[in-house]
Length: 301
Length: 158
Image (cartoon, rainbow over all chains, first blue to last red; front, top):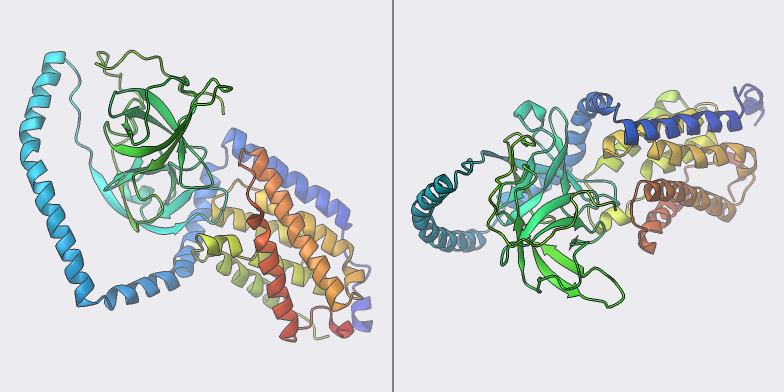
């Protein structure tokens, strides 16, 4: 204790002064980051510096997975082959019909003088890790702006939409899942073409369809697909299945809960559609859909 | 008490950051103790001249960067308990083991509550009670540290 006494009085500014200073700096940084978005490049720079650390930190899990993959039994591989073969056979049948359908669709679009739907190039990305923040539904994947991934691009898997790239770092990028509270997906009910906006639920693996009237024509089991109105997602990708519709007399809106079709919390790989999100593309005007009035795009949350 | 080198302090803080950056998911994420804050508190109580509120702020910024959160959230959430720890540092050395455990648990909860308030302001939902599990696992880890005879406060260990 005698030794420590020498340090007793040389402690610099008082703790309260330090607290005030650093708390103020933190608050200013938070406001600048949240409201003014000035710090994007700073974040990118530091994220590049932290990237090697991230690789090291995720390496134990990758090692475990590779060992697991290595020791897969012949039986399970056989099973998987069987499943994949079945799937290929079923898809092949559908695929045979696709060229003729596409030709027909092109022809119809020409008749309508509508813009041709374009092919979507995609890249396979592997999930590095999920978000460390228990409040957010995000994943980090191993493709970044160096590989042509840009913020705003859509991420999908075999079963439907997963989410959207919200931040692209040089060697990795952050995908916000459709189940996150901050992400909205413009959708359409496949059965009747009704348009709506799906919001993430935040905590559990669910989606909400808010701001739809009580008498809206949606049933349990209805499939929601992307409407393509935002220019981010291509038209017709599966998003969710309606799980529950509650119509309360005391609320002007129906309470609709949906489950995403894509494995937002299951897969190791995702597809990133690498066309630039094209906000400038004019919408196809003649839309042969029911003329039901939809809720506003950016309804306040 | 053996003097502590700067390398030890920053080496352990770095190790804490690496533990934080492990790919936690699901229930593990809920249970994950706040490694960086635990290491910070340890050094704040033991050597306040090497590790002070500024260090806490800096580590908070690194955590924000690694997690892709808003800048400054963890920084603020670490600065507040760091202040309390430094303020009561002389008294903590006189605490018994259980008093010390209670004190550290309080600090962990303070950090989580500050973070929760900031998250609520940025529009998150109120989480379930399991949110505080991280503080509980943190205090268990702290107890482990004391049992493994690493003396936190030196002479007054019972």
